[in-house]
Image (tube, rainbow, N blue to C red; front, side, top):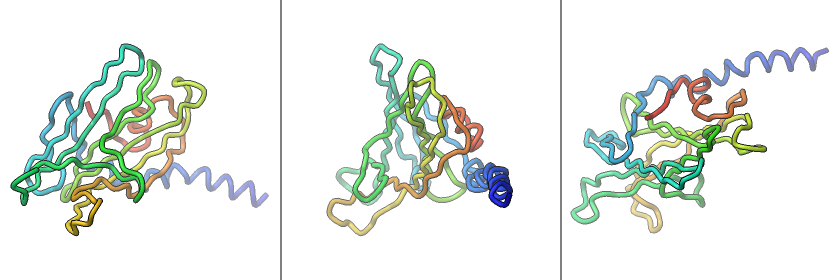
Length: 190
């Protein structure tokens, strides 16, 4: 009986915990990104940086977007624009984000958010393929924040989107964009 009651309580509060955990994300300004170049202040210094969204057409249901992020380095006389890679961990780095789309559903997408002050936040939503792109499965979200590294350590770029936390939504979705709306209150970025 106790096990059943405990399970019932945990199931009923799980959506409330998920909403409380993500409440701050939907209070940030979502940046709409168009195909091509986008001027966005990524580091919070008041100057426009650069986000490039490019479409990769492959003439089937799995064409996708590639998004790259660049910061203008105010101290540099050479190489004044820096690519901002993503770091899931100390050993795992990616130079761009790639969406994952099918005819039925999107399996990976992202949102670029601007807090009231400070650097940008990126939320990436992903779900496994399952048996097909039309499957419905839980969506995992990873929150990345822009970090500035002034230490000039060999092998470490000056700007990096670092994964701060990951969590899984409580419901199942075919399309991660539906999960962004329902779980985090974030619409499409296009």
